[in-house]
Image 1 (cartoon, helix red, strand yellow):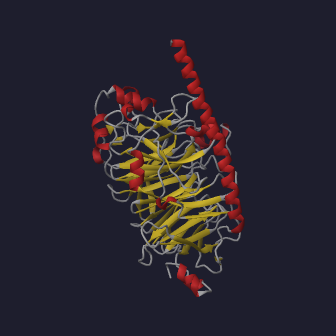
Image 2 (cartoon, one colour):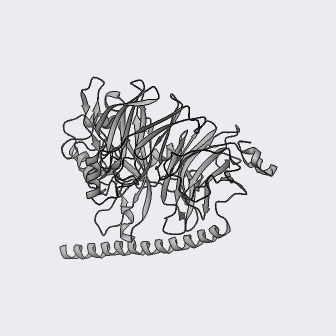
Image 3 (tube, helix red, strand yellow):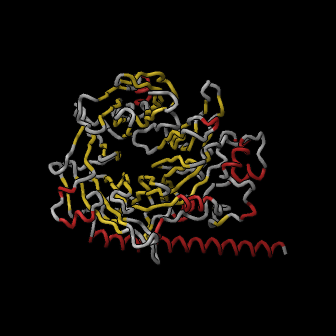
Length: 543
């Protein structure tokens, strides 16, 4: 009888595996079919609009340092208190006047060059002296608890470094320049990382950094981390908390695009190699992850490890019998309770871009649902039975705070978090069941959003491409709240005569700011007097 049961088990497992392989093959067929469909759409229409505005048409303001070499203006942030647009560049930080970046009377320029030893170590490790072995500024934020102080981090010639600064008389005074920036800033200036300062809700209720980055030179240890938390008097409230080390079930070659402080949680958006697809090959999926701000980490094997970390797939696709997926998130922007993600197809295939919206309610619903797991390498991925999920459930912030302060976590809880990939079974559905906007033939990589410009609930998306074009896309509400908006590519802004990627995009007041490796630009969001036909004004909410 035991032998018979074994035979039955083997045949049933083989059947499951055969079914899984069949679905993989079918999935590949679907991908090809979808690609052909999008290809035909891309041939008929790309991201162009009727109106194209060139440098001579725009009230274009440009800033470029005197150097004829790239300065890598890849980080922009608006600081309203100082009226500066701060720019993180290679070995330097700039402050430009928000209303006119060409104004030389209000301008800050300060060098932060790497040390000679750091440059030497970087070069003997096989990196190029320029741009790799330089100090690229990647994050600058004002510390609201201490007047006129800032936290800054940079790549430090592949030795990430952090600074404490004070702004005095249009210049930064360096308070500390030897802080460890590992896990906060990237090693490689080309990496996609994210960091956010959370003002309230972290342990001790003191401002704390949350980041998605890597901890090593070869990028083998990606992580989501909250560094050590110190109270105002300098005492340590709690140690660092991070994702499980060297566990690709939690993070698998992630490329982070954004992070947000919402309620009791911090949300991270990124793309990664999808483990649930690896039996069919290598594929990228977009994710949203969530951690509790007040998570102190676990005990024993989970010491300094998040016990609230959860992640879910983001579904941005054109619906149909064979859905067409935009799997690679490039940027994300939050308006109210909705996150708007900019997605693309894989850059090695036919290019297409899409904008999808994700409501906070739908994201949290996915995190409250079933977990997904693969029992062994030949098993299909299935929902985890609810009876196997511990109580309290991972991700419950109120109970997480109580649990993480205990010296010993319940065995069932520790075992579940230690062995699980913390992946949710259901993907987060996009609003309206389809993209708000999609087009073939262009690769968009940065996004900002303006809401309710004309008072009718409309949205205006500004997206920037890898060729230096900025698109203004208007989305007018449908007849009912359930109807998808009607979108129009109103204008193409073409600020450069050559093709160059736009790496950063910001909006403030009546201006769009953008950064490339050679220059920083500023253009007005309202260009109604440039339209040659009155019906074009009708589509633009700014008119």
